[in-house]
Length: 64
Image (cartoon, rainbow, N blue to C red; front, side, top):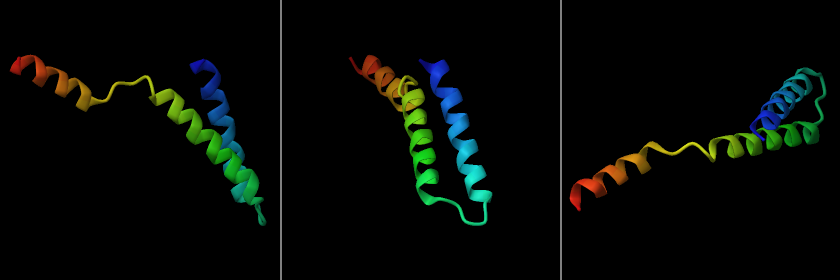
């Protein structure tokens, strides 16, 4: 699944940057591209544990 999101995100940002470089960019295309990029980032970072969770687990083990 991760292999699918990375190319989609790269294409979405490429489209957004290309659209932004035009003299009259289409705002809807840019919005869709940014939403796709943000959704892909959300899906990719959902599996990464936060540093605070690791610290709180260590603190709980030390206390009890």
